[in-house]
Length: 314
Image 1 (cartoon, one colour):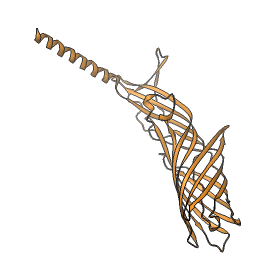
Image 2 (image 1 turned 135 degrees about the vertical axis):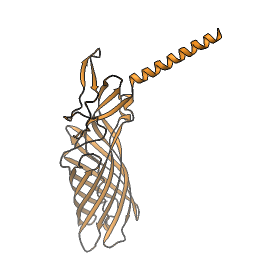
Image 3 (image 1 turned 90 degrees about the vertical axis):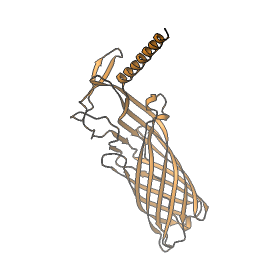
Image 4 (image 1 turned 30 degrees about the vertical axis):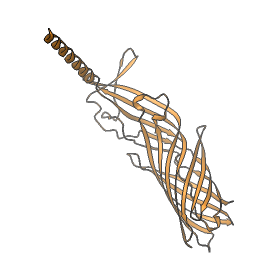
């Protein structure tokens, strides 16, 4: 009798194991793919912080800059494979949901080589920065930018710590590092596929749109002339920005399987230009910023940002 109970338990355990294994095999595993991303709002670039012997007081820097072109496109990694025509092919069948999408196996076998990313940019960016020296070779800066786009206001706020040298009679060096906060609008399309034993994958589509505030980090190095014999000084700034495009873990209403999804872009820039000392503690700064987005798989696009800035010692 005892042996029969043991055999019965073994049979039940085997049946349970086989059922679980069959369920797992039939359900398969799910994979999430980023299909398309559209972002709206300005990218961030640190202000030009020049070092002047005559401006070693609190300095107010209002500025205005223009961005061209007003959109950037490219290809982001993580797209599904596509068919021979470059399209992600799925079958639509009627069901109780009322529609169900299925991906036939052996159809989408090519890598996606199109563009699935678009960044719509404002044409004009208004800025204001306050630079506060805290020692002969360091300063704290706070500021913000504003840009309108398609009837929406976009704001940027930042803070930075700066180290600089003012002892040279010819060239001054300044290093800036800080964090920036800004809002962007995202429209993201995802696909989730579940592999089965049948000759197709189950496909689910998801789309998210939200106005969200993100945190970015940046560094900048600026060289500028300091000759007291001239009122015109050349400068060159190099900067790198880690720009967050979206972070779905912060998005309300998103599905649990997307909670760890995020996307960052890395922007590098060079800004040559010159400043003109018009009066004591007052200079005008003119320059052109060249910005490269190096995070897309397609060829990086160069963005141009002409800059007009006023350095006013308080």
